[in-house]
Length: 165
Image (tube, rainbow, N blue to C red; front, side, top):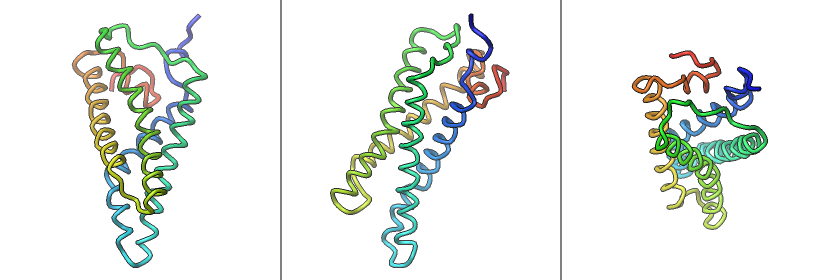
């Protein structure tokens, strides 16, 4: 029998989600400047890139924790009002997020390990795809909240149940 708790993610999953999201947004906004900090001859030349690496590693670890949690816990059901194409798009973008949240830090690390510098074409391209996917995800969530009147997905992710924001 399903309980109300089965209809939403646990508090831990919500915290992992939003910590990851905030760090990804931070990296989208400031990541390039942090890498460019290596061009300075002062303390910023080592400090700023180390922030970039630390945040990237943290995103990777949080993503692996989220993936472990997701593999050991059933996700709440999607809203019954979602059409088949919406379900497919939601599942594909979800998988792409996991792939990118693992690939971006790993390719950045590999580029650094191979060349000794924190630039690389693959991480840069992944960054743009991740940014665009994040935008698509935000648009999709808002469409469900406003236009489609689906159950409150954003409210659930914020941990406030199915209330409409």
